[in-house]
Image (cartoon, rainbow, N blue to C red; front, side, top):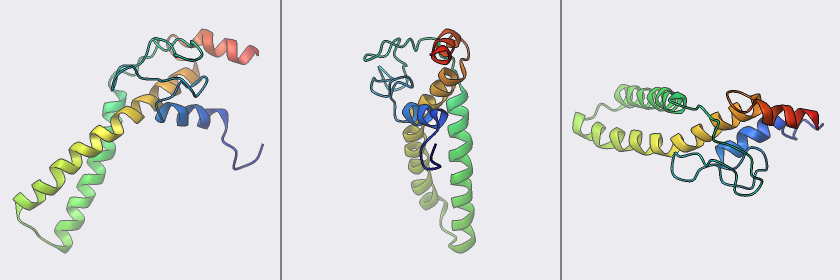
Length: 131
């Protein structure tokens, strides 16, 4: 296997991050913004077993929080601005980044669970391994 060729684990995570079925890569993972489809519309893989719960939101909060705080501190150190200007910049930026990262993060978490055979995905994993 080439070093540039993704491993199956990386491929599954990329598929999940892009909102695609981790099994076939063609079907849709989500039926709504954060609602995971019960089954893949292409290959029929059952996806309702996922237990992503709050992990995607926690990951997004940690990432966006660290990024925004670092940006605020860097801006304050170099160019002290009025509080209303900083709020008008960083509140919308925080909102946009959080909303933009939430679905890809949830897709990656569901793909991770699918790949590892966690929660209800044990049978799908055993079927993949036996092939």
